[in-house]
Length: 135
Image (cartoon, rainbow, N blue to C red; front, side, top):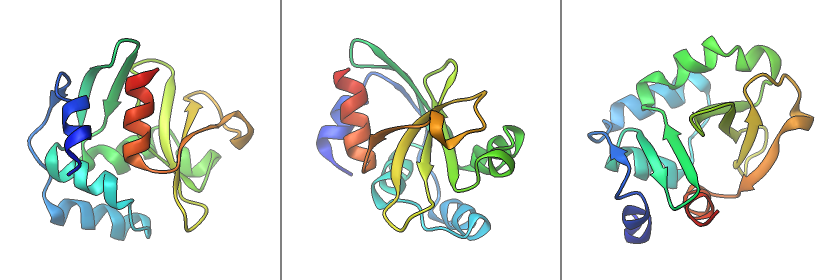
């Protein structure tokens, strides 16, 4: 796990680490390998919530809630190819765009059913955390 990322998230409420088996179960159910940096974070803290930097609030969902929350938000029905993994604690979801081999991170309003409403946040998980911290 990247020491800089550990420092950036240190003031957030962190969960106990995820089990590698849980991560693999989610990957098997969705048919996609999750980004390595995200998996490293989940093995460090299975989800997190709180202030990130001076202007951001971030919720990273526990791995065991990923599938059920994506089903609850009907993500696959309306925007197949993205996988929500968290939020800003309000009306913005953070998601992996899994439509391509190079998975990126996007933000999209929870109420949206259109890819056009998504905005690119980062190309990898560590950059996403750093960007959120520095906003």
